[in-house]
Length: 110
Length: 120
Image (cartoon, rainbow over all chains, first blue to last red; front, side):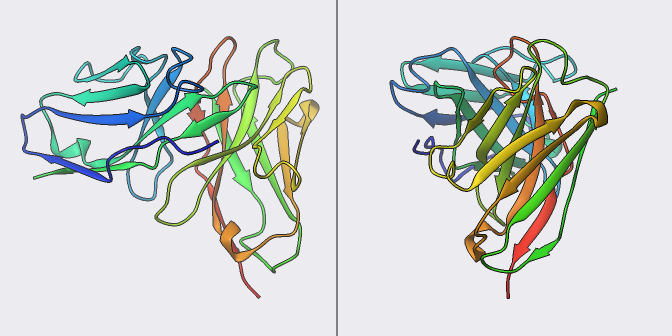
């Protein structure tokens, strides 16, 4: 499987909104409503932020939202806060009980 | 609460076999639908899914690495073991184990990760 495509970096000022895209293929992102998003702070394990394209786990701020259109999924963070600065990874089920991750996006809060 | 913790050697030599253990608590791999995966991350690089084992002992592997990987479980010890043969410096990475709950297709709990360096 080829990695999903994410922008290497995005940035925004506190209070602003940003969107991170995640582009796959009709064999992964486009075939299943099973994209998840993970936040990773330096030296820490990834943390689940969004699952099944747009659902938020209990305890995750409603400033985080997910969506999908065709082969591209998106993560939007509204009301940016300094603590949101981290790496973000998308992940899609790719069939046959396998998963594929994106290349990761570094979010900088200016 | 659910916790997972990886353990294994911090340094292995090229061509050696790596054995990593994931010890977990707060759930049972004998529960129908429960699954545990291994995922790795080279320094400064992206996450890569490696393998998964299910409650019923079904096993699944990354297409690109399947010839080198073996995943197994010891339900009585709440452990999942990953072996990777013929280690190479490009396999230097932090290795994570992560849980996938019943009827889920995402990783809801992760271990802290263990850094494995491959060097002679």
